[in-house]
Image (cartoon, rainbow, N blue to C red; front, side, top):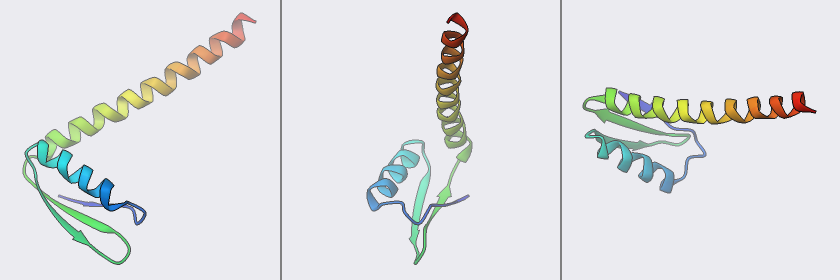
Length: 77
């Protein structure tokens, strides 16, 4: 699998992401380019996908919870 990173991604962010992916048992090969960096991922990427999905769901739940609480406070007025 490959991951194409945004052009504004810093070297520190790339290193952090690569370390995290390696902690999931993936081999990470970094290919810096002129406009963006490509990460080549070797291994069971399903684990990484599950972890990313969990993180996305937590953020969505947090946002929805705050919106719902804001709506309830408006209704209580």
